[in-house]
Length: 108
Image (cartoon, rainbow, N blue to C red; front, side, top):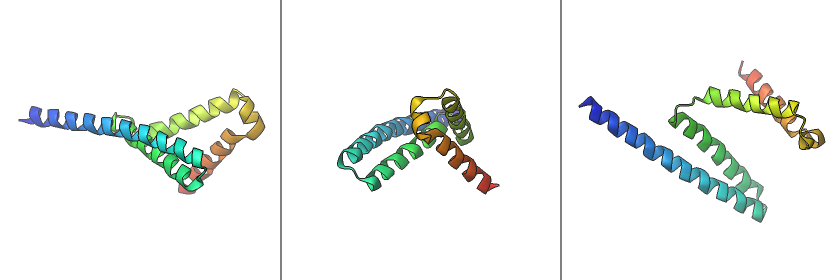
């Protein structure tokens, strides 16, 4: 009987993953619409939904939140060290890195 329950759990998880993927696509569409109508509230809402959906999707496929956070910092550090032209002009990634580090230090 346990095998049947496990199969149901796997199937349910697959359904959740598919739902999250669809939600992610829908949220990207909402982001694009918000940029078109120039609504910072709608843009922030769409971006936050995308971020949340990505974290939950990662968890559903076996990647923990800490791994995502570590990968984000790794990518930020790599992009800063690669000296992208946009980073040199605006410093967005450096600012993001500093924000995330300050946020992490406040937790401690």
